[in-house]
Image (cartoon, protein in one colour):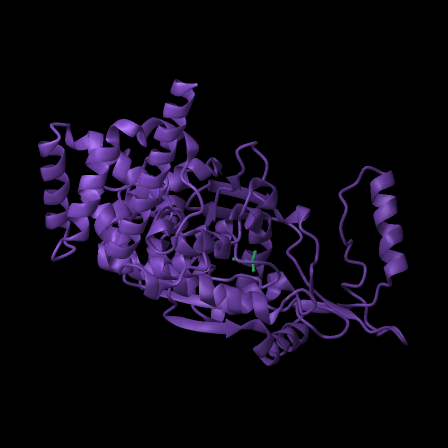
Amino acid sequence: MHVRTRFAPSPTGTLHLGSIRTALFCWLYARHHEGVFVLRIEDTDRERSTEENVQAIFDGLDWLGLGADEGPFFQTRRFERYGAVVKEWLEQGKAYHCYCTKGELDELRARQLANGEKVGYDGRCRDRQEPREGVDPVVRFRSPLDGEVIVSDQVRGTVVFDNAQLDDLIIARSDGTPTYNFTVVVDDFDMEITHVIRGDDHLNNTPRQINMFRALGAEPPAYAHLPMILGADGSKLSKRHGAVDIRDYRAQGYLPDAMLNYLVRLGWSHGDQEIFSVDEMVRLFDIADVNQSASAFNPEKLRWVNQQHIIAAPTARLGQELVPHLEALGLDLSSGPDPVQVAEAFHERAETLHQMAESARYCFEDFEAIDPTAVKKHLRPAILEPLKAVTEKLSSLADWSRESIAEAIEATAGSFEIKMGKLGQPIRVAVTGGGVSPPIDVTVQLVGRERTLARLNRALEIIEARREGQQQSGAS
Ligand code: GLU
């Protein structure tokens, strides 16, 4: 069989992690089977659908590399087709006009509730022969009255629904616009979708959709309903659990492949492997391995997965990805090292690109003050002479390479008979303002000659002032 899947978001909100996980599974399944991945924008809710949300869907999928093979199709551009099906079904008696007023339906509902009956339309217009004057009718699907619909869900297993429980749903409103469950069926049919993979909040729609498929004279596609993603507190994942909009993750410096890696594990597993490249996911993914139970979103694990991808990523690419994050901090890139070099130096220790940019700030701009605890601990009078000597040595270096910097520091430490680290740490504190950075020769090289010398001189002044202070307090 030639597999065709579709991602069918409604652009009524932002593209959130749950939707992306659905898109990813659809995409992976299509890729794995060398099939076709269709993108369909379900924008029939015109009041809540916005251009901006549509654009966010495109941007998000694009960023993640989940490109569609067909589409985007827009449901609002297919109204003619839906209208034609409605007309055909009316002619064939598969659908009928319903003239019930809101008042009547409210009354029906109140009565059903009072009698403890199932709430739903009772089909009173099914056999109506005459139109009602002055009422614009809706169109309802004539749902089978008995029998059952068996959904062989590829994740949930067999789920059986009684037709008696399904009422005749509205497929076209009184203004003629089609409704959600109906447009989905016409589209899945026309687009020859073989596998509908979506969130399990749609499972209850499935029997209705299968009945409509049959009304089209077609066999329904296979269905796979994905378990929900929950927040750490066990409730449905939402804004309350922090960012759910994919744009936020992009802005924070998560790598697209890391996002996909993290999301694929929400519901799917392959042994106990945690880190997957996209190629591996494509090779290994199967719907049969999707878990039935809901999975919890864990931002800490997402950061860890991101870090693993940052460590493994080619630094040339990381450097490119780092640029917007450096810029977002207001740093002037022309006044610092090549971002690729920064990525090389910092990629072992950053959970996000934003964090990486933050830690590299001192390579691009001066900092106000050195961390006072670091001053206290590392800029002591005892290190004044070695630090002076190394400053001098560095200032006369012919080339500002990592090797010559390392040599200068080692030679100075050697001549004062102190360990490399005893000198390295004060240099680090002086040039970065804190006690943590990449290896000292790499750090100094990145910070550059001018800034390094200025910062070392400032540190020397701090130490001198400190020594004077000590002498004075000693003398008094
Ligand atoms: N448009 C629906 C949604 O965004 C998805 C419909 C479907 O996948 O069948 O929830």
